[in-house]
Length: 98
Image (cartoon, rainbow, N blue to C red; front, top):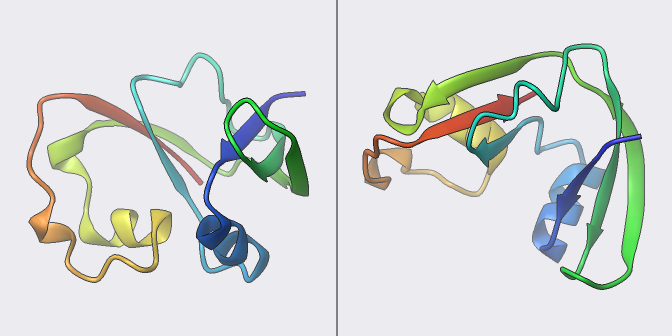
């Protein structure tokens, strides 16, 4: 089973309260994550023990350039961000998993 790993305790709280409803990953992850996949949602230190928060079903996987991300998509990734327009445009790609 695949996992989505998160490293911040703030993100853990957002996941538990269901305020975080998407994740943005750098690079094209469409070959790894597919619609309908069940993944484990884990939180913990990098290279350390992780706590399983829950299992989740992937609703959608989209590949976009960073500059194509909407403020709403960014807020779904991080509800604490209130001014996503301050993000700098980049030519890199990202994958949004919801």
